[in-house]
Amino acid sequence: MSSYFTSNITVANRAIGGRSSRSFIEQGRLAAIHEVIKPGDYLFVQFGHNDATAGNAERYTPPADYKEYLRDDYIRTTRELGATPVVVTPVSRRSYNESTGRFNVSFPAYVDAAKAVAQEEGAALVDLSAASRSYLDVIGVEGSKKIFLWLNAGQYPNFPNGLQDNTHFQERGAVEMARLVARAVAGLGLPLSGEVVSVSAA
Image (cartoon, rainbow, N blue to C red; front, side, top):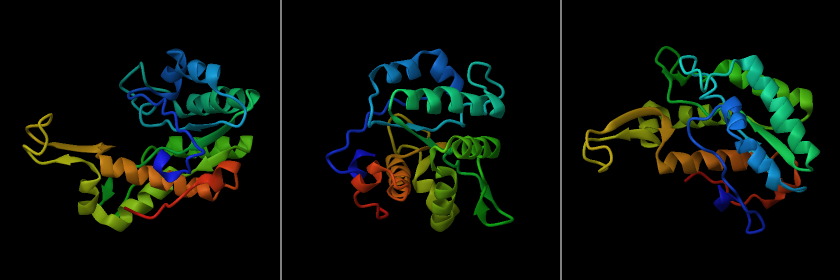
């Protein structure tokens, strides 16, 4: 992500796998961010994948609760500390619709909730759901295998039997998603927007 911003910007990635909007708070991870965040900083908030895991009580957070956490804990508390929250809708999974020839909206209830709370609170919004789907539609169902963790047997030592993962990204995919976020930030009209550098596709 930092490669898409000028040297004036430092990116501190506090994301951690397997956490939902609720468990990230319950484990004290948001509090740890709020202890060090300062006026002029930005907090990019993207949840939804793990919130939607209905079969996992530790992660699952209903859309209505997810929206409340975004509003009260991520947006309002961040603003009280003088920083700027940026709501990011959930990135798309590799979920292709054969009948339409396009990729499906992943986690639509969470996408809608994120959009709604951003609008209600007047918070900046990066619609990564839409941007990532548009990108996937361009590269196509076969091309998308090159950005998700679709690996051939023997391709990587950690996955000797190969892998077909439609959620997580290879490095190239992660770079492309970061590019999409940066491109969206460039159009938000924030002070940070002027710090975005090249966002051409890799």
